[in-house]
Image (cartoon, one colour):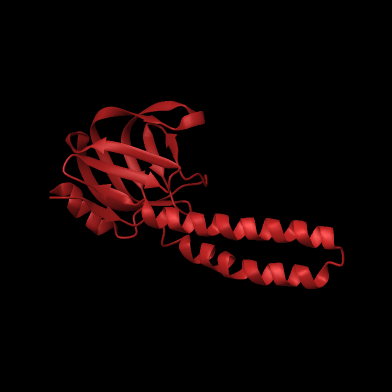
Length: 162
């Protein structure tokens, strides 16, 4: 079958691009408005660093996508988070948009691993067996269900049902 990849960042990419385009304008305006050289230099460095970080985030969201290969479902958020789900543990899969009150890209709520984008998920995976999800500083949790966002949830559901 090979690996199929799926985007998840269409909702946040436009905002990142806007900030990336506005950053040079901000640097230029600061240079015009601030009279002290030492402050202009410090703000120039911070503005340039901001632009680099925005470009890096855009690249990471493009490079590290959700994927389905012959053995696993790979759920990612840039390089910050990667979770591997064995396809043998995948039970039912369906589309279903859910709104979440907390704006965390990843959390576990009542045994559900939630990977949201802009407070929402649109793919639901019921697991046939509990799996452990390590959220770093937030600890490891046992999960029996996964909800995540995909830009094209229908394709993800079809790929997981094969």
